[in-house]
Image 1 (cartoon, rainbow, N blue to C red):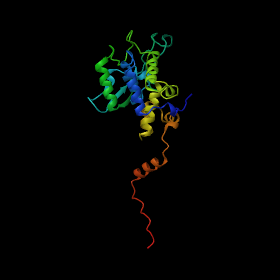
Image 2: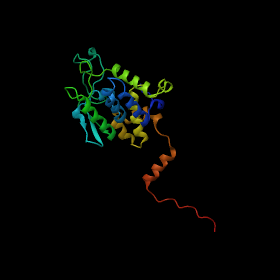
Image 3: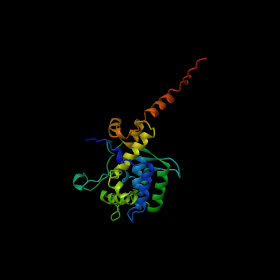
Length: 236
């Protein structure tokens, strides 16, 4: 069952950067996961997509806009539910066949974060950007969940931390999609980047869309590009 995103859970850019800085300061497990959370915020990746991202999937310049070429995901699944008998086996992206991938733009800020991650932490033998501290496997949700909870406690006041703002790491993905929509990116493109159908996108993020009526009318007027309406002449 689909639920609309609660706008109260969606962080703004300043809050997101504050949280990422707090992750960096969260003990030994925090720094290697900064890029993981950044991928969810800046590129709207699902956790299973970020955790299976490999270095060859990155098309990054030294600085500026790049691309993330997603081809597979690694969901957290018990071995009894997989075909191979191995936990969290690699599989296709959500709502896609094994042959279907997805390209997502990588903003300049995310490009810098990914370069920093690669230079500091390298990759797993198979090229994955993120690996478990013990066996090099998938980073478990309990691990990144604890880091996120500690970062929220560090970044927010007790009152804010007790509320819904960025309560779950997944709320970073919601924030990314909401930011794109409110930034004026057309919904069809946002749906493509996020890996949603257009109908699901509009239902899930209905409450997060900016309802600025005058802004919408100004955009229509600009698109029409017609002559300005003449000002009424006063009486002579």
